[in-house]
Image: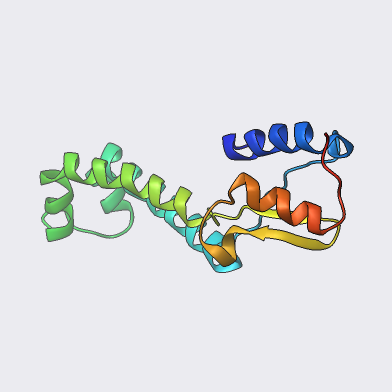
Length: 138
């Protein structure tokens, strides 16, 4: 669970004791295209690592000649390609992040980071919960 969720949950449980034990977090699913892109990026990373560590034997196995420009490029730029492979890992991880921080009370949306593009302020959540009929503690 994210730090923002835990802080908000603790704040709301103090402010609205009726919510104790009823505040949960769920993972918001990424779009299907993003999941496929992340998987393809991961596969590309594995192929790149195999080419880097196994060298020309991988290229021979898939039909490249040893004097091929591709083989020469990989042999001459191993460090750059290794760093690129590391960056592919970050790309794959970021493809599946949605940035969602949605606050629901039953079926009613109290706040949506996807709609507003920002995290809620505590007073906004409190006011929205009051408007939904919850009474804060004294």
